[in-house]
Image 1 (cartoon, rainbow, N blue to C red):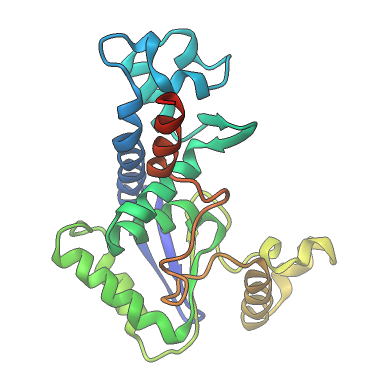
Image 2: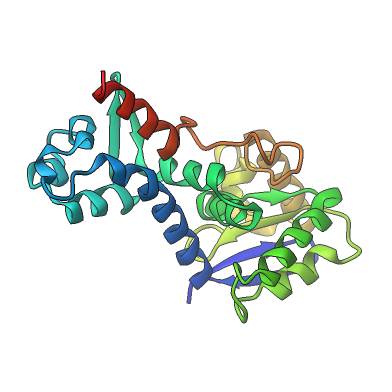
Length: 243
């Protein structure tokens, strides 16, 4: 079973991977919500969105409402082109959730997009994140028996250091890659380092990357990659097609 791990320097807890699958569905649905207005249900071959898809995409070659929905919400390889710039559907979906979702939905999008690359919360903001999770559980947005309670317990512990995420099928934290160890040293020597030294070096590398911190200061201004979302994109395309 896959899992999102939350790890402090002292211990690690797991959130079941079922929740990440749900996060992905939220993002897909919130991208499709505005884009479906660009799809002609009765005559899919006349849909406005077709003009902005790659010529070799299956959705453009065999247009139907289903093929368009699958292409735009699969979040794997779909993209939309506007003024010579490519907007990947994965980032479009994540950003759509960020602009349309409540805080728990936004947290799901952040974890879906960044758990593999180690999203993290600093010590002073651990309670802020725990309160958000409690609100999500209280409103039944986050599901029971998935591990949320264990995540909250970890966040509210007296330890003041950061809590970092990882995903079960990717590198755990700390690891030699995020620490920059493998580019400067013999990779095998990483395993001989004391645990506290691994943690310190990995945190240094993580802080140097930027854009992965879950923080109230940037919570409402953060966006993924190009910053475009489905709602903004739909407004732009609709205005152009109506000119």
